[in-house]
Image (cartoon, rainbow, N blue to C red):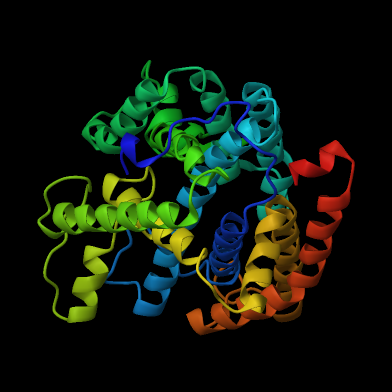
Length: 392
């Protein structure tokens, strides 16, 4: 996607009041359900941990492709956060203060990660895992600082971070060296605090994700009401195809953008797995080309006619993302504790199901269980006058 792909910013007089954009909610709802699948896996299949990149020799195909699907979640969440910030700024007759919006919500997300989210994962506080909610919060703070810059400079920042951060891979610091803590936050997945009563681990290094949120912010004008829907669909389609073709070129010939080159394997399935075995922590260029390319195609597809029930279900899940996020984590914590109490630990200190098919089944059942409260909250949030409720 290039700077010329998006319309120029609209003036205050031109911009009408907007409602929620259904295709954005639908995309967010889809990735929330994919996220549910991945989190069920992390609860009841944790004894079959997957590395990053994944070890294709020890990861069976069903587990590999389930985890691969989940790669879509973080890029979409962070891209849509930037896009939503632009829409917030321009969706009223008078432009709003996007910096205040981003700072308040960014700090709120960081607080959530350190408190409710971490407890939901562990049921205790012995390690603080700084994961996706944390990095979204930091990205919002970064965008608050960068949003005042000219669009041309923002494009330069976004593309430099997306395409250039793989050049930083050889840089590393050992614990105790002067740059270790800063580099752990920005680029290397590691422990900030590795000893003591409370350990702290950065699971989502920040630097490339800033490029993603800025890219989402820059794409905002594409979703203004004055943009012709067919024009938007053409741009999204071209951007998605271009990103995937660049992925095929760079990854197919092992040119650039991935730390681990693929090799021909004994079977076709293993070879395909090796090609798509891209690095998430931090996200490689090939990871981002693949996921953001698919995201563009999905956004285009969700603007096309489809059954009303499909539109409604995806949009309902996507209209209350933080509510669903917290709800599903605590439901999973409760279910896991009940399974552990009923059946006991069967894999060391963990309880685990036999294979990935159980994860698929449990995810489907949980999606059906959690849909009514999520739909209710989305409707309540829409009609509520409480400002704090919009944080969920």
